[in-house]
Image (cartoon, rainbow, N blue to C red; front, side, top):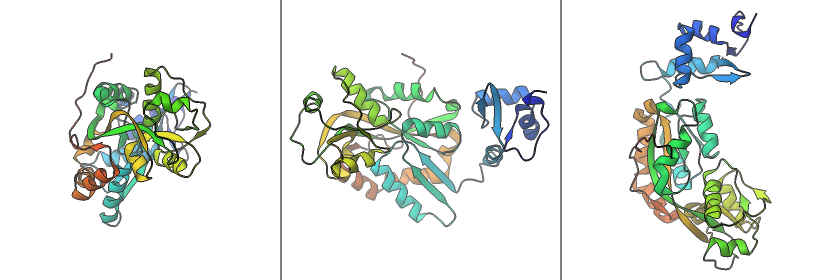
Length: 306
């Protein structure tokens, strides 16, 4: 008897395709179509689809009359000090019982959590601002369910290298790397590391050897500020938060990705209003490196694959 033909077991947290179809009162053909559209939480293990029972329950609740999980906003993805402070202010003012949380785990990890329905929204940045619409669209296309997502622009940011306070002034990336500095690097799924690698490649420069790494951009800034390294990829804002010198390598787009239905939720709209508030715009100016002109605009979808 195959896995799909097993009898449902109440103790199992996962359902087979046949069990999930019966649970949702669908036929299996419809269920498979919904998987391809990203409409049902599922994962593939050794060639077979499995459906976490708890996530199916959440998905059913979320689909009921606009969702009963409207008191929850879980954000996971790129690290950003302006966004983090704004989310913290919104969380402090929220009613008791409302959960607003931010996990700065990097662009790719955040998108994976969004695809798994473990996060509600994901801040991303992936390459230079000029090509953001195409590059962000190509990146999202790698994740299940992205056809049902929308992208809201938050800001343009200066991206580059955060420098130690004891570093001698430097004018170019080539000059910096010629000194063979101790570089605090980020994981390959982090947008700041991706930008740095692209800048090195464009300049024909070899990447410094990996000596130390940081989980978040702000951790990288702290490590440089505390003397654990000479420099690290990051934004002017993260450097400004720790009072570090900064070598600018260009601008990037910071976007917020979410399911289309979440865009109209009260908490998401409250977050956008908080980001546009006088307190948040003043903070962005003090941190430095932000252009908030795009804030709140939907990024146009693109099918360009070049």
